[in-house]
Image 1: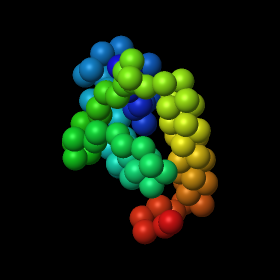
Image 2 (image 1 turned 120 degrees about the vertical axis):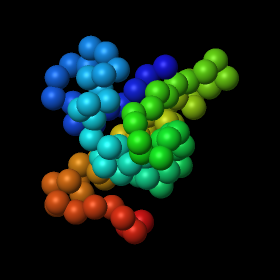
Image 3 (image 1 turned 60 degrees about the vertical axis):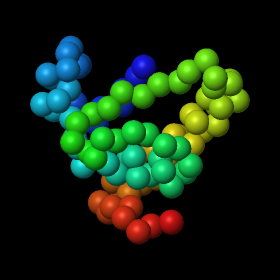
Length: 91
């Protein structure tokens, strides 16, 4: 299991720190962007940070493809952030 937590001001020591500091808006934008690049992340409606993971059913190729798509999505989010715009409706 792993988690991606945006907006953390300190190293997450426990769930309370994560829940009190994470940037829910950025998390939702990340999940939407991942969906656009063909990856599904469970978001629980953006209410709280979620855990994610890989299983033994995923091949190394699956993981490489996923990491490439995450990188693509993160670059698009970073570009949008630099331009101070949101990716809503952008293809």
